Image (tube, rainbow, N blue to C red; front, side, top):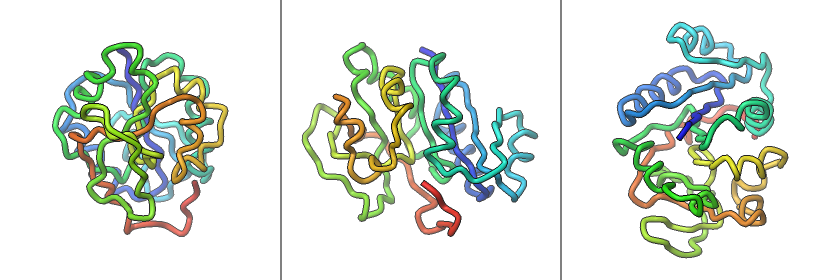
Length: 201
């Protein structure tokens, strides 16, 4: 399987460094990693390029949704799975990508849009539980700081404005996809209390 991990950055270099460290420590398979930068002014781009990360710089703050869709539009079709990691995410569970891909071991699983459990989940974004399937908790939505999207789901999403999905989940579920969490995989959303007045969804 061909895996793309993408991250959207806008300043907060200290969080980006910690995120990259945690991902490297907790996954051990091959994947492509592309970073879309929304015009950082704190030397984020220079730092990433110095460590040979592929960076696409937009030169301005497009917001998360526009940066994501513009950045992925011409490249996602080359991948079986597209995984979004925010740069304020810290991976806790070891072998996290390996365990995720073990779940997607048959084509019927490609209807699932899943995230690890966020140990620092903001109560304002807490989803409603709809049911359980093994180690999967099905919910109304799963935020978006870390999200696994199979190629078939990206085909559906790439033309959508997914901002309403952050706390309603309608976009994915209206398309026939199941949304939820891996109950046995954990991350920490470190940036919850380090928000910026320039944050744009």
